[in-house]
Image (cartoon, rainbow, N blue to C red):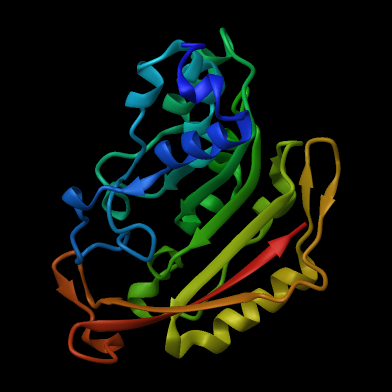
Length: 258
């Protein structure tokens, strides 16, 4: 192995670029999600994969790059009913089992990004989210919580957007966290309601790590994204909300607490 050009000629910095490229996360387009679901969306159109064959070919490569599937991959959790998430998802219990197994032989690296998709009924009291935040050997750098159009209370009835913020004071985040992002999404025609929710969150919400460090969104400029998706979900077409044939337009505002 030491005689290989990879190790005898190429410097470690170049090798790291190679490992990162070979172990990059990608969407498996052979298993595309159905358009008529509430979980197919930008950057989430198919299950994510990382090909780890490289780590099995050489002990030295494994020693240098074993952690990259953790640092390169976005760890995703769905705190939702079963019809609001893909068939195969990571549960906190499964993640804990993996983290404990790795910790027996390795020092756990920082996880660059964790994404949580919660329905409000699972988010608002904070307990289900705290189960994730309390995982042992779990060191996320950035966490993004995305509230989708179908995660709001009584979206089917077209109720005004509202959420109970008890969880903001209840939850304590890992000390490794440097940024907490929240993406608030609804229909384009509810843009003003999203903007009101965002304004209240930026002005009134302060998140805390377990070491009592506070994360604030003061002076944050929300990031705005718009996208269009299918108007059919759960074998029902939402004609009320269509902006075109079987088309819904979405408005997303993301706030960052640092």
